[in-house]
Image (cartoon, rainbow, N blue to C red; front, side, top):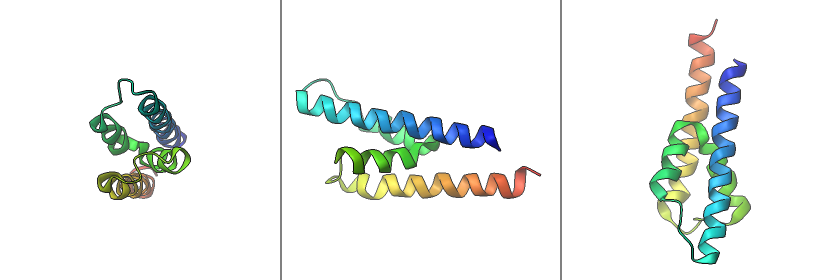
Length: 90
């Protein structure tokens, strides 16, 4: 159980950091983190970090795909974690 929480925390922390880095790079007109990369991290457990990154950095909040996609992945991550804890771990 603790491995699952550590994994979700780590992925969320990575995506939160990527959102911050992408916002900083956007302000500097530097090379950006691809949106696909952000969504891949969200799909593989970092959805909550993506949502928190959007709120904390005010980043990608006007993009419809992010406004709905990040919360979707956050709920999906939580749902899958619940199912794993409920049915796969005794």
